[in-house]
Amino acid sequence: MDLHIVMQRLPVLLKGSEMTIELTVLTIIFGSLLGVLLALLKISKNKVISNIATFYIWIFRGTPLLLQIFFIYYALPMTIPSLTLTPFTGATIALSLNCGAYMAEIIRGGIVSIDKGQFEACKALGFTYGQTMFKVVLPQTFRVIIPPVGNQFISMLKDTSLVSTIAMVELMRTAQEIYAATFKPTEIFATTAVLYLLMTTVFSTVFNSIEKKLSVY
Image (cartoon, rainbow, N blue to C red; front, side):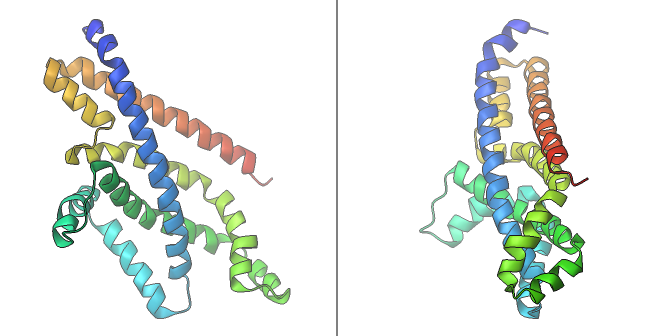
């Protein structure tokens, strides 16, 4: 292995890693907000609203993420001529919409796991549905769902590599460009793998720490 090539190109790969982390964090934030909305809609007693949320989740969980990225970035602007998307914007939208579907099921599962007695207690105290959800149920739900949310974060961090297909310059795209310039696949892709492992390890440790702090004994 040519360590000189690795050390020479490492700063560029680290820059790509920063973009990967930024994209992942934005995706999880937007995806979580969308997931909360979809989860509440899905458990709604209104069948029309519930079915709309179920249909959305079915679409985004049932089709490949790469296809969704292509559709958002290439097909959508052709359908709406006035719409112009940069690779970063297109990637963020596609990943967030996909993440929202998975987060919705995670959050819905967390809500369902809360003791029904708490819903009845809130009703007896005169709480509205919104007050019950946002003041009592969701805070407890977030503690319950930390492990699956951590898994979703790690999965999304790795899935950001797919946006390299739309010329989004994150870690994987950076590695491909360096390989094309140096023809050193072993050095470049091995270093890229190590960077992905470091990022997933760090964030796994962070989520494990959060889970321990929020554990209810």
